[in-house]
Image: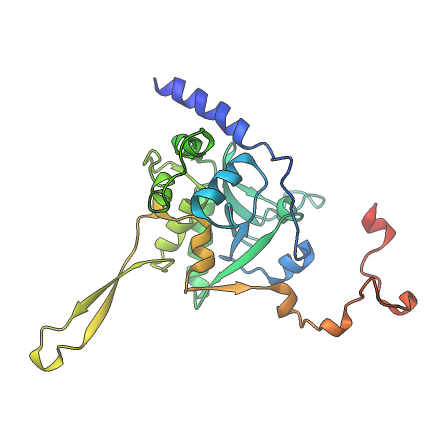
Length: 270
């Protein structure tokens, strides 16, 4: 029975990994800008264009359907002409793998940076995901996603996150946000913890309380959680690089293009 489930799951994974024709992607920053602003242990959120992306965005009511961890130069290229593998992700078909930034060059992305994470813990987070390369995607998770694709009544909001959290519970399998959540959990860095107020028993200080943080189970995390987390900074390369709206070359305004700085060459285009 397990082999049948695995076979069906892989077939379904191929189906869900196909791009949606009517999906349009707008890359708000260039690949060069992304690379210049990313730091190890940054989370790169992606607005995907596949069938499974549509399901995840619906279930989480979010723009983001995928998350990858930036690892910098932790995996140097084996050949000079090979693009460096700077991201680690959990792919639906390939499992946990390293990929070049070019994979998402034409897609809408967002950089989420853990605030205050020291260099030692950044390395530990990066090492955590690298050590899990080769693990398979949690294919049982796909059967939760298929519930959206079936012609049934809309899923109530309060149940959507749970649909993404059932999975198999097998520690040798992963989904994109679960893998990254486990990496940050390994250094006790919060994403969206549950906060409990513990009130004082002292009769003199009855209005005093302490906030006790509880790490939620990693299977409950989705890509949007890194975006809305109060512990992750949103990095916008255009702003970081000193945006000046006066420098924009508008199409409806007269311009002396001879004075404009050339951003690309014919060689780049070809």
